[in-house]
Length: 217
Image (tube, rainbow, N blue to C red; front, side):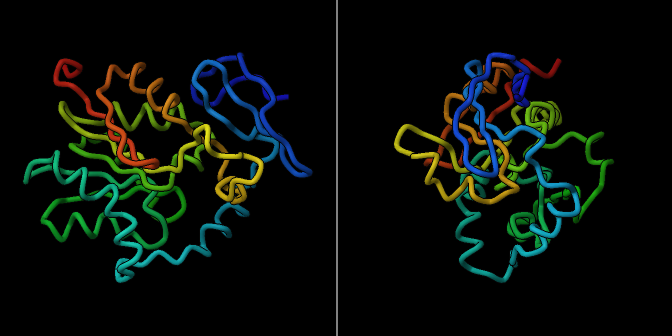
């Protein structure tokens, strides 16, 4: 039995769904649905799975997919903004798209760009695309990213979100064994409230969090 929510650390959790391989729980405090640690792949198994991803900056379809984050962020950043692509993967592409517009972008990925020094930096924008669902400690990781923003900075999170129209038991998104936590709009609003952030939802899978100037003292 899982004991604490990995996002908000509440013990107010309950069984949510199960199959022959995995049990899932939901948190009544922040609405996160998650897979307890005993069902997670180990690091080697996880990397083998990621190595199969065919991300390529020359792939126009992949660029179109990432434009769901790229275009909104572009509206909110100034010409001298510096960014971080967190969870950049084996074929960084979103960073290339920003660099083509003359922005400087650092990379972090625990498997492919393990540069922990980025966590001592401040950024004007941080992107994390199809990463949040992989985090085994999402509360810590996402809060750390938000704290790394400069005043008026933006944190962009792309992940497929649960809503009342989704049947979790048949939902394809949960079938990737590296997908271990699932967010809803309520979960994202919980984070915004915790961070005193302004929040904007774009479609069903992109959320922008804005750090107000008053939080940078």
